[in-house]
Length: 319
Image 1 (cartoon, rainbow, N blue to C red):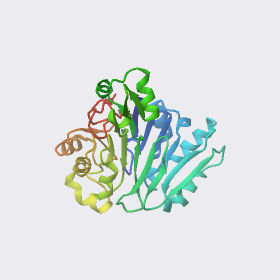
Image 2 (image 1 turned 45 degrees about the horizontal axis):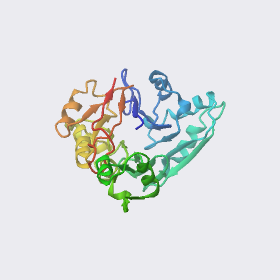
Image 3 (image 1 turned 90 degrees about the vertical axis):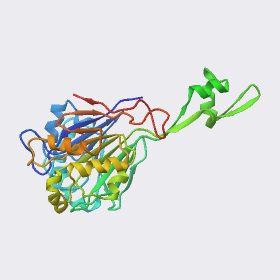
């Protein structure tokens, strides 16, 4: 199974700090490299992370507040300098089209082809292959979409069942291709010796208050990347500005049955994030408080054989 990793390019919310760049998250998945919410400075963070902007295959923007999109012109300019050949799709809430057009045309110079894809306020599916990418609306002050990325479900042969059916070697491949196989005069159906397992999945929930759609996006995902702008002591600010506390983010992860919760989008009022870790950890056991340039490996969080499982359990955070 190929590696999947989330590169954290920035963890600040409205204002960057000395140690936190504006938002930016790159999900590298086989040949796909999906950039979420490129805030100001993302182009430079790509350099620090050792990532080439030209490898970005699509951009998904949750909403058009500046800390989630002002880095787009730099990324497009870098792709032009690197002579990217394939047009990059950019998905975003449809009401933000005038702003995205301005970002695309923000400067004079070499241009790169961009495919703008305004997504309806109700969300929808923007890609089916090689990964399914879908969006749902979130509860912010402006139209905002949360994103979910998942592999297609796959049929996996179960060795113990194959052995019991007397199937080995090339016959296993023939059964997988044909769907049936005759063994000693008996027809064996593929469903008898296999199980369908969901692929790995990631949800991106940014800039939202508590809402059912956030839980739906995160349902059963292996990694939930979620904003945690405030602590519970500032919950009134979270409600006022349409954000989450660390405890609320952890509650969403728990209700959704997520595997690993990665907290990000921190207010500059918190130079120390120990409170976020403590508050979320009281509700949900597997929490990472993201740091700029951190890499989170996405691994199946459910044990083999469990419904929806795809491989070894657990999610590992790389330095």
